[in-house]
Image (tube, rainbow, N blue to C red; front, side):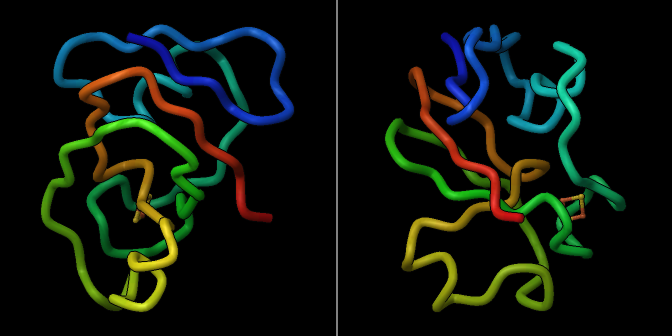
Length: 89
Ligand code: FES
């Protein structure tokens, strides 16, 4: 499996059970984050395509409306297929 980050040329490999954020940081990419446990919302990104498993997170970090628009928390999402994401800056 791999992650394609829009605007970044090389796909990022995903280790089993890793989150998006863990994979991106392991690959040395600069990506916004803070708490790493679904409470701050700093790691929000847009899931453009792919299947994911979502771990629990706080609605303070990601609202239902945002989630319905395809926004996810990179620290709370485990890819289940190749995924394409876009940073939200
Ligand atoms: S780093 Fe805080 S919600 Fe993801």
